[in-house]
Image (tube, rainbow over all chains, first blue to last red; front, side):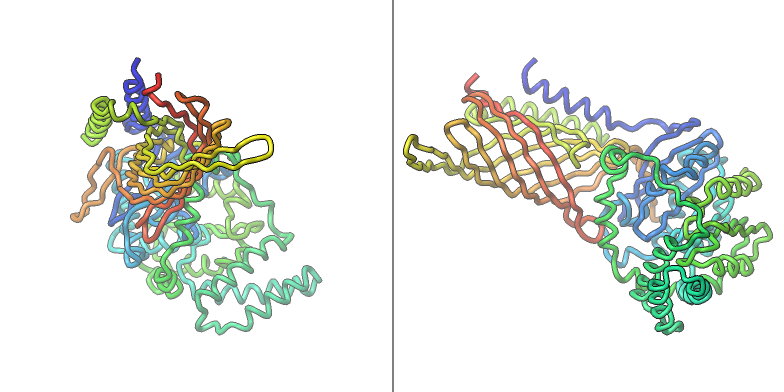
Length: 349
Length: 196
């Protein structure tokens, strides 16, 4: 065999490896497809039980986390046993790529991406599938904005909001209130006095009517540190994927995701800090499950309680997890998943 | 359709290589494992044209050290697959400086690359159209300019064959709203076909 023929054969083999396949709708789905919308190409990783015909579209947090950061945990394994989990990298996040300008990175643009992805799932897997949106943290902002736009909420079977940050000023005010209440109790118990004093002093130095994005980042950072201080929390489950798969051999590329995250346009953060969905929550009539950690200082459970009271849906549930922080699915995975399955079974097709 | 076009392109390159065999007989052909982020496997082929070559001698007490230095141009084409994510097709030209120790043939080369990377999405791409409809597209891709910095270490074993290791740091330009960061590892052989 001539050298040139060998080269051609090798290239052809590589092309075949990269070839497209028909949708894999099995009990152990593992496939990737892409969504292209308004300048962005966004990977969609579908894993789990496709035979259920129930697709849980996970809106990741951050912004900037990427969908696959949510995979490989106890809760995601349990959910994949039951349903098809759709891990999507939103525009300019995770492994998404494309050509865009700063003004193409807005909440509304991502709502349109979400809508296009819901339609794409129906095109790919059939109109008879059930689709549930599940948004965590920033994903709660995006999911709420989706539910509020036009009649988009009727495109999905239900909305699951997990510690969702859909009102930044409310979130910050409640965070400061919680810091003062629980922080003072911790000081009285002489737990971590130095750090609690620092946090309380910082929180009380802020103008609660006008908290900037930089101040929000600092509060968020303290909230993360608080979770490590509290004895009331369960141990947080970690990814069961190995370092090699997470960093090199898996479908995710963490370096690309980190670089994307670092370059998110500042104009987006200006939009985010002023975003408040609370006055519009009454428009939500679709079945809604709110899942919140009792000790979530980032997005306090009071935000979940207000949401529960404001939405108009008659099919609404609020679950507060007593040993959880900002990610209850990782602190109390069995209870969290049981509640989620109970909700999905009620409202699937 | 795009897949067929790509295969035709590769066949064309193959025939082109045949047609230019007279030229290539005088140049080394490099074939390497081309690893995107080290472990996303691929293949790269290339050649090298020494634009300017000069020799430098250092006299020592017992021996004379001879180093051959050159400025080179190296066109290459590479392809890799990041499974369940994307595939990349790279057309690239390196401009560099190479220094070879004549005694054992060990060399190092430093180069700057100018490349054009086409990134093919894995699986079907669903496209949101302006009227709100969704269309399915296979082999959807986007292209990026990709400059790079390269460090290569290797050995010319004899006048027919050599080996090399090459590390690359690169960036896709106009990627989302900014740039990307890419790393590549090449492990390859160089053949001087005219000497076989």
